[in-house]
Amino acid sequence: MAVRIRLTRVGSKKNPIYRVVVADSRSPRDGRFIEIIGRYNPQTDPSTIELDEAKVKDWLAKGAQPSEPVAKLIKAAGIST
Image (cartoon, rainbow, N blue to C red; front, top):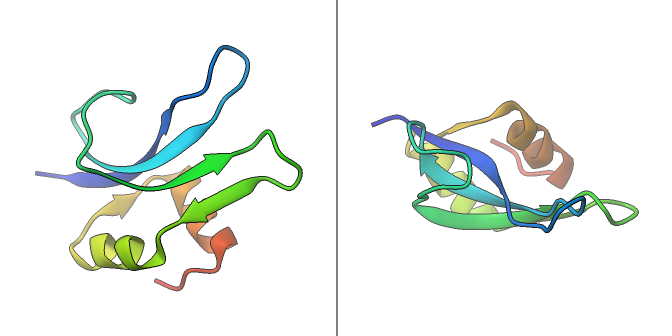
């Protein structure tokens, strides 16, 4: 099973807010996930990035692959991999 750390959209129309989730790579974008590990709101100035550092490191150690946008968020949050 290929596990990815990726974004899932939860905001209303024209108001995107995202959860950072751990999910099976075969599940749909807003579908089933394993665990919520943070959230991201690009609407605020500056953008709000809240990640649970312990959970992120734990999932990366288990072999979960972050998507490109999530990799940028992890880097912006200052979490060393």
